[in-house]
Length: 292
Picture 1 (cartoon, helix red, strand yellow):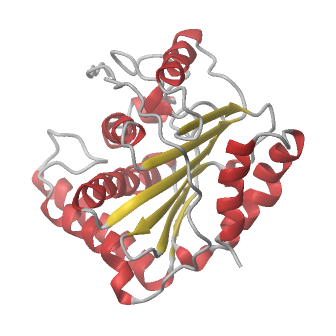
Picture 2 (picture 1 turned 45 degrees about the horizontal axis):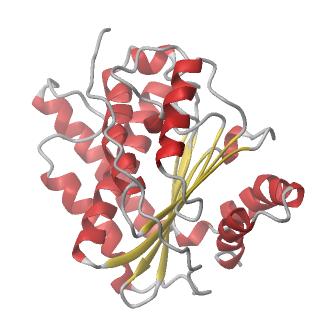
């Protein structure tokens, strides 16, 4: 399978003093479902959905759309959605929905519904969308399953678009903590260049922790502050595209235990070894503030 894409275009960073969001409880009222509502609207109207190839048959597109809507409906109803199947069944839905959520977040930032977003990535290697150059062709970026499944591959391509946009948005603050560097030095060099282009660590904090990360803690946590100062959560637990998996979880405010697990079993351990790192402490405090 040979697929090429455009390279990442990373704009210069904007130096903004980081102000930690206030300690706000998650709002479970209907008014705070604008994030899910916006994501649902995108699923229903996007001509090209993340997680399925551009040349897919219309019936396959509709099946994928229905799967994404079912996932979102379950997420809204119960606060969590989990799936245990083979990687090629999981990834198009889970990471497809993650990409849609990132599209929705960018839209909500533009409209002013969301005034601030804090994102914590915890991964084995540096986040895949920021290691991309010219084509996702190196073995360290994607597994055999992803490279041979068009829907899974498409999720990587979609987030190559969204993550750099979030990184370059002045109201978005990103923490990327990873266990070890990429196997391919070219991939790592691309990521290192992105870090150099974003030197303000209060805006983009990156750290190679040298600490083992359980697959159950791999993923992303999005904290969204609305214009009326309520904080909402969207989280995903899944391995990176270079590691096949058979399980995933997506969650909102009702699964705050996952934040505690991440804090207790990874982030707190790292912070204890770096007690003077105020940027890291800021993001760890965000985890602490938002679980019971």
